[in-house]
Structures are given as structure tokens and as C-alpha cells.
Length: 396
Ligand SMILES: [Zn+2]
Image (tube, rainbow, N blue to C red; front, top):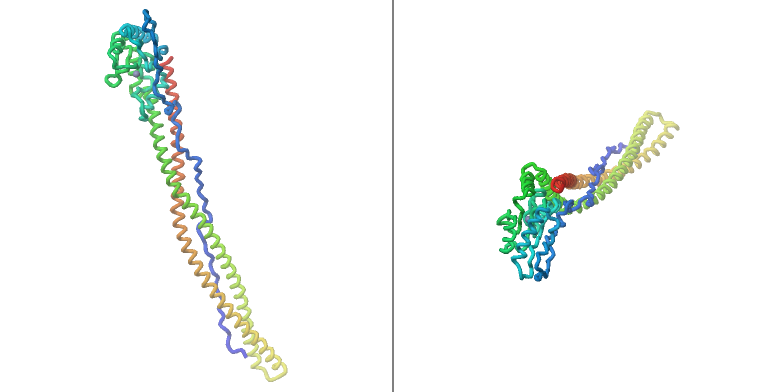
């Protein structure tokens, strides 16, 4: 006989775990963009060659007549400079009668403003073997009115030039450098040198463009070093974190699918509990009805039915108690898993935020590097145009 209604609690839903990483895009940093060197060579800072001239080995001792100059770099001199050099060379030739070497030797004479720019840049960069050089357009060499001679400290060389219209203008720093001071052409070239050296001149503009390019190139290279160093640290950490997040997402998905299954089982359980409770209430009503009835065939039949259904209800109650215990145990298990997921989520989130902001900083740094490259190119283009303008002025 049924005596008491079994205590069956219906269970509330269990929440799924959520995670933070589903909408995160991976940071892609293309290392192809990062080119270590920047081209500063539009007019050849790397192509600097040492000034050389062939050794003129001559055997003119027997010549009685002065044969004319015999040195490299003579033909490119200005006609006025050629005349004065020829005079100096003849004086030297006469003074050196009986010697093997009787000609003055020009180490460097005419230079284009482009060559002048190379020498100036070479000096600015502190490369080995670079003498001081004026800015392009300002050097008297650009007007073909200056020479650098060999054996510059030799008395006979000095006398020959000194007595024939040549002056050393950069003393004591460059005793080899002579200019034909006093000629009309030199006066004009010296005036242009003053103009070119003045602040704001076209040559100073060229210098400023080139200096900006150089400064930005240094900045760019140091940013590239910084970028590469930080990327080397960041990339493996990011890859590792990405793999961990993928693993974590699978764990969360499996957990959530077990949570879904638990919720479905709970719904089915609750429905069964409802049916059970309905049956228990129906049985109580039946029992009250039976108790009010006079003994009869009908009453006997109802008692039989009551006992049969009550027996089934007791078994159902026991089954539901077992199911409830099972659901509660699974619920505790899933709750512990959910808490573990939350902890892992917090740890991953912390690492993600740190690496993500470093990745964004790296992307900004890459943009700065690219901007510098564009600025350097634009400085070099402007410098190149200015140098063409200087060339048109100096070599008309
Ligand atoms: Zn010189």
C-alpha cells in the first residue's frame, strides 16, 4: 500500500561555459616587408673609389724641347687652368733636367658635382680614405680650376706652381690642393662657392635633404633592429598561445555539449517527475474515493487497480530518486569543470591581452618603418633633383 509521496525535486538548468577568444583575429606580421637596408645610393655612397692615377713612367731625359704636360686629368681642366698648368709643368721640367720624372702629376682635377656629392657623402659617413670635401657646387674642382698634385711637399713642385699663377688655398690641411687664383674664371667660381656655402643655398638645400635622409635611415635601421628583436620573442609566444587557445576552445566545446546533454536529461527527468506527481495525486483521490465506498464488487475492483498502480508508482519513485542522484553527481562534476574552465580562461585572457597589445605595437612599429622608408625616398628624390639643378648651374 502506498503511504507517502516520495520526495522528488525537479532540477534547474546548468549554465554553459563561455570563453573570450572566439572573435580574435590572428595578427599576421609579414617579415617580407622588413628589409634591413635602405637604399641611399642614388648617387653612389657605396661606389666611392680611391682617387687613383696611373704612374706616368717617362723617359724624356734626352728631349731638349719641353713636350707639354704628361699627366692624367689634364685634359678635363678648364682652358685657363690648362695654360697655367702647362707653364708650371714646363718650369718643373726645366728645373728637373737630368731626372727621370720631369712632369707634375695631377692626382685629381675636374670633378662633376655628382662626384663631389659622392666625396662629400663619403666624408660625412666617415668611411675610410675620405678627405674633407666641400658641398657639391662649392668646390673649385667642379669648375675645373683646381688640382690636387702628387709629391705636394716637394720644394720643386711647390716652386713650379707657386711661380706660375697657382695658390694653395686650403692650408695647412690640404697642401696638395692648388687653385689658379686671380683669373677671371676663378673669381667667378669663388663667388659661386660663397653663394653655394651660404645658408639656404641650393647646395645647402641638397645637404639638408641628404642629411635628413641619412638621419631617418639611421632611425629606420634602429627601428628595424628593435622590431626584429621583439618579433623574435613575440612570434613563438603568440604561436604557442594560439595553439593553447585552440585546445581550450575544444575543451570548452566538449564541456558545453555535455552540459547540453545534462540539460536535456534534466528536462526529461522533470517531465517524468511531473507525470509521477500527477499519478500520485490521482492515486490519493482514488484512495479517498475507495475509503468512502460501501463494500461492493466495484470497490474490490478499484482496490485491485489502486494496489497495482501504487506498486508501479513506488517503483517509479525509486527509479526517479536514482536518476536524481545521478543528475546531481553529474551536475557537481560539470560545475567543477566549469570552474576550471573559468580559471584557464582568465589565465589565457591575461596572456592574450599582453601579447595582443605587443603585437599591435609591432604593427605600429612596422608602419613607422614603412613611413620612414617613404620619407627617405622622398628626401633622396628631392636631393637628386637639387643636384641636377646644381649641375646645370656649375656645368652649363
Ligand atoms: Zn682639391
